[in-house]
Image 1 (cartoon, rainbow, N blue to C red):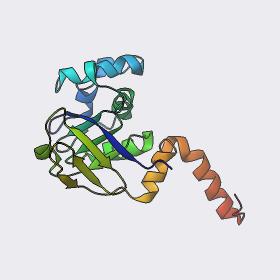
Image 2 (image 1 turned 180 degrees about the horizontal axis):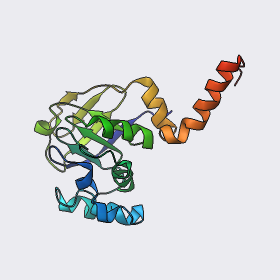
Image 3 (image 1 turned 180 degrees about the vertical axis):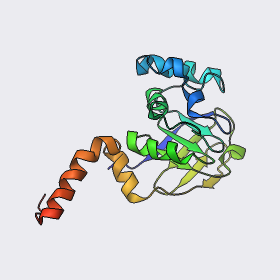
Length: 177
C-alpha cells in the first residue's frame, strides 16, 4: 500500500464547483490527456495549462456538486495532480473519487490557510495538510483504512474483481488466498 503522503505546489479552486465546470460536457469526449488541458477552465484558467504532475488541487466548499459524472474525477486524474483537498465534497463526487482512484481529503479551513502556489504536504492517513510556508497544520478527516486500501489498488473499479472473489470464497467457506 502506498504511504499516501503527498508534497507539491497547490492550485486553488472556488466554492460550489459542479462537475460540469470541472470538465465541460463538450470536452468529455476528448482523449483524457487533451481534456485535462481544460479542467477548471472557467474557475482557474491557468490550471489546465500549467498544472504539473504531483501538484495538489485545493478547493472550497461542496466541490463536485451537481451531476455524478465520474468523468470529472477522471479528468482531474489526467491532469497529474497527486491529490485533491477541499473544505468539503459533494457526496457523489467523494464516492466517485475513491471508485476511480483519486486521493482526496476533506480539510475544513484549508482555503483560508493557503495561497495559490504554496507548497503543501498532505498526510492522507493522518488527515493533515501542512502549509510549508507557514508551518500551519490543518486537521482534516482521516481516510478510513478500507478506502486507503481501495486507493492503493487503483480504486474500486480496479479492485472489484478481487473483492468479489474474496466474498465468493468466504461464502463458500474457502478462505485461503
